[in-house]
Length: 109
Image (tube, one colour):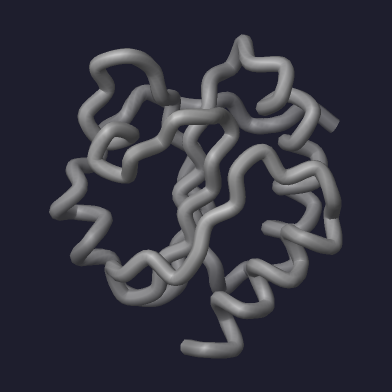
């Protein structure tokens, strides 16, 4: 099953900070090996949490949104609730870590 590509940033930090509910902002690039390897796991877990909005944003040098979150490695998932960062995962490789993170995000809400 092919994964959805990372898309150029179209949201501002202020727009993300204003989003209600649970949001996972997934920073990466389409040519990143770590991103490619992690995507099936991320998308599988995300599918189990339809109440969580999953936004994939292409990051790179000079991209303002990634810099505002101090993203340094890809993929970086920033898990937010009502505009506030709850936690983040950097280069996740285990489904159990993703499950735990998503569960924490929705349980505390």
